[in-house]
Image (cartoon, rainbow, N blue to C red):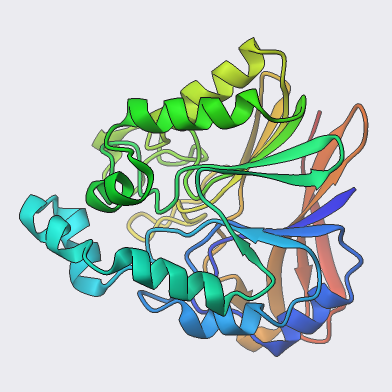
Length: 293
């Protein structure tokens, strides 16, 4: 099957994107979250609701949050994060309704095919140095630590088919600690590997229990550093798993003339991916291979 992967949108989605993907022939679409430019994801979600393909999404740290809440999380202000979490479940429910046929997941298991499961990881992930949005995660999922999150993901894996794809907002720890690594921290290099440890441990559990993790799809850490201008590696292959960071921001360039997504192709014994650029008429401009296993 072929799956279209759309990285952090941050407001960059219009009717041309909807028309292209509806006619694309993809078997499914996966969205890594961060629909909002900063906050308020609802306008983009309402445009995504016009999609006719099977589609799944995970909310990012910019989705269903408020600006004061996001700032409090970034700065680690405990009392302010508790205050900001008030109403977050309601905001997530509105986002889910706005997305219409696009399934919004988080700590959830789904079926991409009869023998291919989709695990949607911890929602609203924001980096591996601490558990962000803890008050909301505790209230909504009874998750208050990385260990709680790992255990919840492992329980989902235990009831899933052998073959899995994992959809996350931020990627797992273990893929490098340099700013140019897929999930290395670029805005503060001293933070090193900024991947999520709970996701890393859940993936190790999947392999230990006989599952075949075909691909892990994530974003969050933008392809180009805002601080140094350096470009990061956007994929890695480890333990027979293809890892993809799809967060090309902005995903629409040249006034709409270049639009980014990733094509993931799965066969029985191989997984390969390509970066795909299309123009505003839906014509393919460029295809660049990311990795094959």
